[in-house]
Length: 208
Image (tube, rainbow, N blue to C red; front, side, top):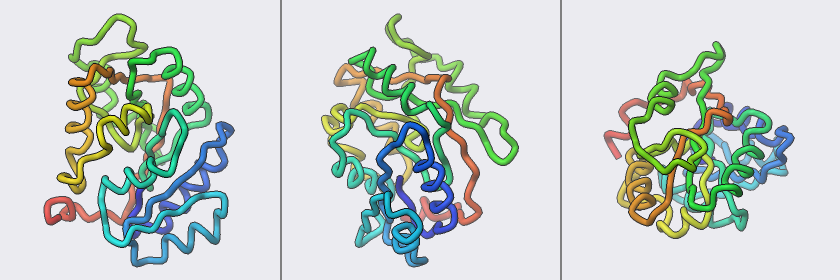
């Protein structure tokens, strides 16, 4: 998980992740927050690992979290999202069964209402053609905050490109994965919940 100045949101999401029966290892990369995020996480959830970046790395901060891991798979999460119980185990089982599958992207449920995010229809009806063995619709890209990746494939691609701060990093990696023979798919058996943060700056991406 990457975060920046969303202390209350990240605390809620980390708590939900640590409570999962899947018992994931939770790593939070704090992108140089000024609101005491890192200290608050350490106080509230000692089981979570916090990496404090000296600068705001944007999406590239995820590379720091992946470098800390030696697990075969990595589940990405935003600071205002959380995985539904059982989804991470299902993702691992599917990736175990399909060694050329690099990414599985989850169904996204918008909270507090519980309805599907409009992008789910696009994922479900993806026009991308893939091999018959895929367990779900083939995708040409993925959503980092709602996907589980094969760590070896991520490392093979060099992680998210430092040329992109935030925005477009998934498309670039997806193209590199496809060129290297990896597959991506939507897997409706996985669910991520998203409760949009109120601490959003819509102009931030365009300025950096």
